[in-house]
Length: 98
Image (cartoon, rainbow, N blue to C red; front, side, top):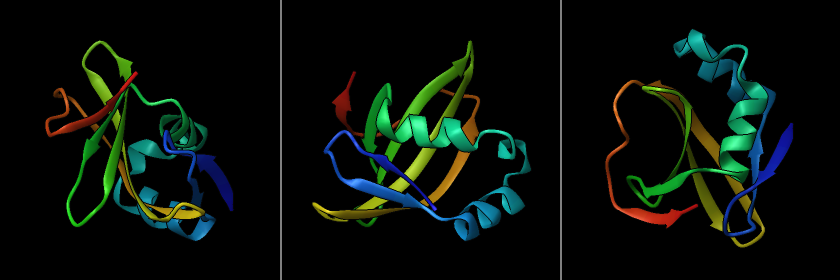
């Protein structure tokens, strides 16, 4: 298990089991484990997600973004839900900007 701290200073857990499930559905992310953690810690934007989730986004190319969806359960705990690449600019209500 690895931990990255969100822009709200909440520790966000990324377990190896969760990583396995993410890469099973998004195999293009397989070599981006540490990029996912960095996206949580140093995002370009944080967008409000569904059901209380947050989406950390980071540009990884001219027209490529990595999106990490996570949930902050409390001020001391959170977890990664999923991660994926987008080839269009992320949309949604921006709640934090670099």
